[in-house]
Image 1 (cartoon, rainbow, N blue to C red):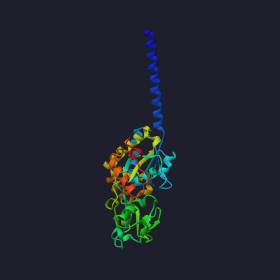
Image 2 (cartoon, rainbow, N blue to C red):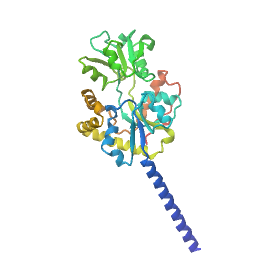
Image 3 (cartoon, rainbow, N blue to C red):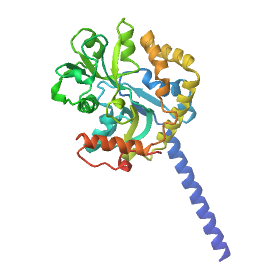
Image 4 (cartoon, rainbow, N blue to C red):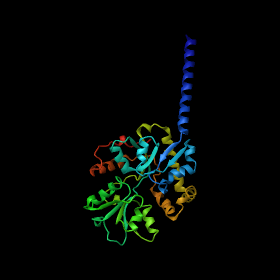
Length: 321
């Protein structure tokens, strides 16, 4: 009987060893599989922590191979993750929450930029001095369904509605359309970019900030994936590497900029260099953390605005891995 028990014990131990070895091989195989991240826009300084993590070898340190993909259309990133064309997407919190309310199986896993960048821009010295002056004016936008969330709330706080302004889709040419007089203002501006672009041609921008006009604080850029991929160990490794990237970036802004433009020479100009430095205070230093109250307040805001018709529970759309 004792020999039998010992035999069973040895067999059980062997089975456990084989099982553990098989699991480790599966994890290793999964870790070396390239992880695809699709950006929200063309490559720019907003994505600095991701590129710094890549250039400094932090992804490699965590056993990851990362492929960074600029989108053909800025509105495509969430859709491409939902259908399995990418593992992670960079997107905007407002756009993401509308997608979740429509039933897309997406979930927030990290924050890239933790404060609003979006703002409403017009030129100083014109006829627009306050938001109520926008009545009857032409307002440009680039992303339908995202930019109008902020604009609607800001107008409402000053007694106006979307129908009181003329909306014009100028796609990527926000600044150019304003300078050419085709529009009187534009929404969807990034305060770390378009105002600098206007300044560099000798003009001055006037900015109206959402968080000062009835819009609660939100995350400008977040990382999302699909619910079925949440158990992929590469996701947590990616976030840890990105955190190392943002800390290194804060400590070494100039040297990381030089490497960035060496790899992306088309961005080596004064505008992008200033944007690189101006964006530093905006990055989430601990991207994996989730501020639940922050998300709950913004969800209530979207519901009050009539943008979200469906009740959302935070555990259904945002996690901390």
